[in-house]
Image (cartoon, rainbow, N blue to C red):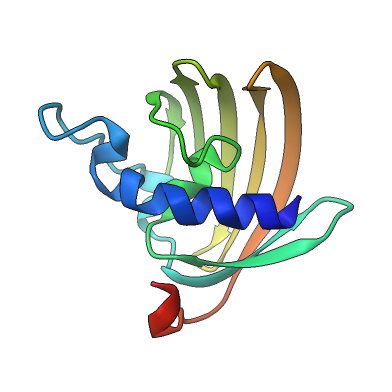
Length: 139
């Protein structure tokens, strides 16, 4: 499970960095206030009651779509405060999800996400913490 998260995020980061995967012709999505203060670097995602995985996170927007990290999705921001964000996203042909982010510090965030991925429901909770800098090879 944790390896799947890292793989999804590694594939998605270039897509997310390119206007949330929407293409050059469309406007880039606004930066969420809750994500603006999060530090980039090496992060550990620990699923509630499960294993943890360490990932390189150059862009915090990847935390919105942990389950659909490699999909091109549209997003609807439900709540956007400096410490809390709620985003609903829809990924044509892949599913949809709703993610709640609660920023504790610039190095710690609680993630709750649920929805449908490839026809199956999912519900996950993660505690994400920055644990260092990314190695040059991981960027």
